[in-house]
Length: 138
Image (tube, rainbow, N blue to C red):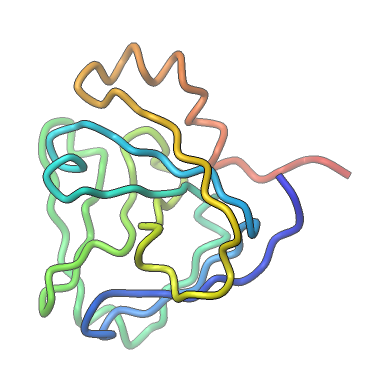
């Protein structure tokens, strides 16, 4: 997975700001579920402990849930951008929208397909659950 660096980012109006520790080369997911496909969201997943929201950003956030209510679609109530969210596949992690990362720290994005319309099958086959786990490599 490589060494971790700090990526900074947020929403369009800059009311929501955060930083995330992740490799310079990320694996991002292009999902066809009803929400991701409508938003055009391509995201990479990190352990929750690798994500830090700036405290002053909280006043700009609101959350939408549907279906199982496991995923927490968090977005800015000013500009409407979902720069990160808690995915159903990884409720112990954070999904960061690739295009919401400030330029300059991501070197490569490997895009993988997630069949969110056939969620259970894709979950088992994809290995996506492992992306929110801390690496135990020495």
